[in-house]
Structures are given as structure tokens and as C-alpha cells.
Image (cartoon, rainbow, N blue to C red; front, top):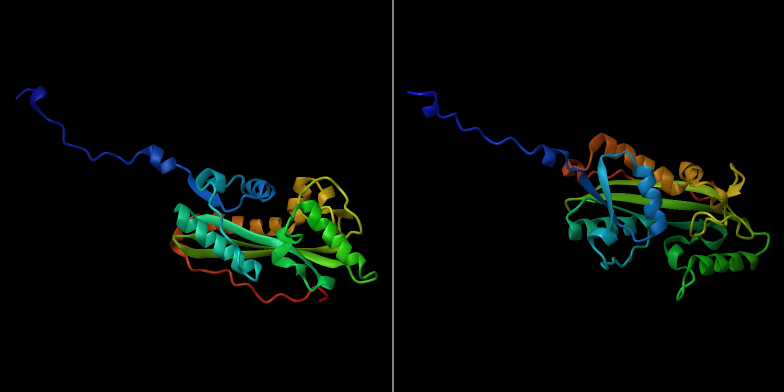
Length: 239
């Protein structure tokens, strides 16, 4: 028998290296350019490909109906995770002003409805506080961030930043209420801070660092699905 007649044993094809190295997609469930920009920067370095709603589900909108930041964030994360088939990271955030009974709260983005905008919302806030001179101007930004995968909530975290409301807008950076939110420790409004300075102290920055730490440890697998961070009841601003 010649060497040519000897057949090599069939080998099972090895898994494609390319498939193994493919980066897992993480959907940022927001159309707010400012939020997406901050989240991309905060999650840089993690082994995930960050995609936005316009990349995956253009034109698909979730209607917020929750009475709390947590309800809205959970609703968005679950909705977009199920629609896209991808792990989805959603957050709901806003401003709570003590003397306004924690308004605008979950209505922060549409505070000046029916035609809300950053400028209109800020003008309304200034007007309401001017109507009660001498009242405390203590406030806090709140961010609740939720990761959902496989149709279940995987992780929920919360971040806060406490400060006061300035009497007039200051600074040109940031978005939303940043020009009015004065952060005493740095003696500047959020709009006066560089992006890296803001991310270091902001509500969203604090929340996303907690989420990033979780993702570094557990990745994006759904094995931890159903595990909730468990938010403790928060104390009032005056405490």
C-alpha cells in the first residue's frame, strides 16, 4: 500500500477563532445624545461593543409610565432587551429639588411641557424658585441604571449628586439642568466642569462606575439574571 492510499483521519473542525473573539454587543437604551456620550466614555475599555437605539431599533420608542426612576429604568431595559435580543443598559435620571416637593423628578425631561427643552425647563425651574424667595435651594441629581438580559433584570444600581440650584445659568458644557446645578465641593455648576470632572462626581458617573464594576466581574451573561442590587430606601435631602 502506497502512502497515497493512506487516508488521514477526519478531524472535527475547530471553532472559528473569529467567532470566539467577536465582541458582545451592549445596547444603550437611550436616544439622548448627551447620556450616550457620557456612558460610552464611562464604559470605554470594557470588552463590549456599545450600540445605540438608532443602530439597532431606529424609530422604536418606549413610553415611560413609571412613577419612580427605578420603574422607568426597569421598563426601558426590559422592553429594549426583548425587542433587540441584546443585553440592554437603560437609565432614568432627573433632578429633585427639595423646596418643590422633589419636582421635577421623573418629569425632568418634560418639565416645561407641552414644549419642553433644556432652556425651557431651566427657565421654569428658575421661575418657580423665584416665586418663593428665601426658600432652601438644596437639590440632588438621581440616576437609576438597570441592565437587562434574557428578558430579566440582571442588575440595578443608583447614583446621586447633591448640590444647590443657582439663581442663573452658568457654563456652556453638559446638558439638561447642568447650568443650574451648583456643586459646592468644586464651586462650579455641572456645566462649568470638564467632562472628566463631571463624570467623576455626577450621579450618572457614580451609577455607571458601579455597573462597570459589575460587568468587569460578571460580563454580559444572563447567569445572574434576576439578581437585583436591591435599593435601600433613601433619606430625604434635608438629612
